[in-house]
Length: 110
Image (cartoon, rainbow, N blue to C red; front, side):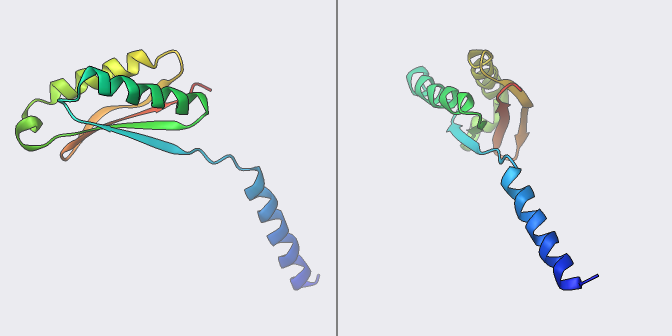
């Protein structure tokens, strides 16, 4: 068997496999615990549009200063967002704290 021919076929097969792959894009919205309802509503509207396009959405709440001592405010905000988007998404990763941020990932339903 010709080794060069084997490598050529292998590379061609790999290229075809990469073309068939579906790459999921992850978008992110960043909020703070003191974010107003109006500001949050248009961020959620963007997230809804991205989810309908088939993209995942990462919702991040950043804490500054003493805000970090009240994580329940952020959890409540994240759960409200998840509830608003429940018709176009499922919660892939529950809200959890990572340092000074709290993160939740929403994905479009399959």
